[in-house]
Length: 406
Image 1: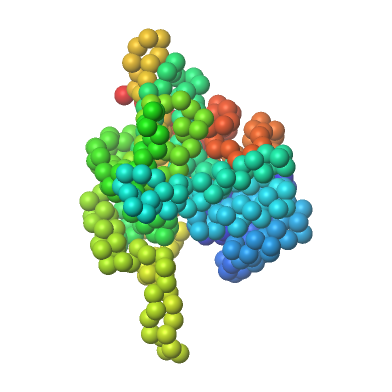
Image 2: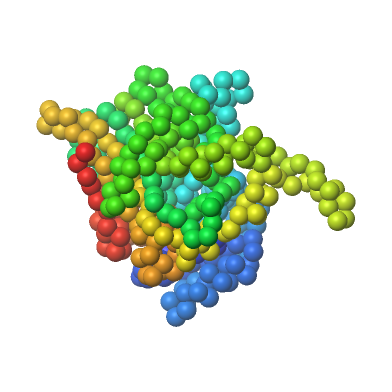
């Protein structure tokens, strides 16, 4: 399998380090707008890097990405950029006739008049609008194949297939006890993406009603996370699982709740109050005259790169799926989960826990596609594929998952 990886940030670099240990990969082209960053990702592989090559590409330039795919004879485009670049990369893959994978889907837009009641443009709508074209070409776009979305959706599929006769509720619950030495506010993932998903209206799905929205940070609940993390308050956040799961799995209710913490929520609310979450450029004075800058890009530039925080991070992160329903006529509730300890991921891969946990899942999916275990055409989420081969291979990678009866 020949893969074009676009994006050599924290997650992209972790992908290279995981993939370098697996034999299924023939070649991986590591491309980034910042060529030295791509070169650094390849160089860090040492002797394992002989199947990897660095390139420069602008993820917004659909034609340039298509040309790069063709020049290297790639079979797959793996998108490790933030959601702003989903559509040009998605369309470049279709133009080149290759398989496409991403970990976050095309951006949403709130309803212009009733943002906290009705959906406007939903996450992934732009991609699903092209599903027929992908299917007609016999090509596959596997969307939302990170950890959340991604592994969380695989857990939902596994529960529906093997653990329940009838699923009533699927709720993604994400929490951690991670801290960063010396920093009071240091997001462990892209602040650009964090602002997007946390300040947009959260989406909830209910059978008979469909998708609808609520106020940000709504429906708080305390969830007890496993492996020593403990109780964390979780709130509704906009996320792809709520848009993906109901397309393939019958459930009466689907939610996504994130353990953010009061201080983190207050900081995000302050950014919103000041307009610093905006993506539209504002004009500010510069040394050579007025310049237009995005407030959110300024916030991101002022914060440390999450990929560099690993040595100062302590604790664990947990991604998981809570499922309620019936089995053999009795009520059942289980939590399927995956925990990564930052000390382990740093020692084993030199990657902090959150980016490593995100990165392992598309690599597992690539291996399943390379072997023919997963096949399909059109625009499909992880729920469209059998879960057991994925979970078995994840364990083989040295990162087992767990299940807790509630």
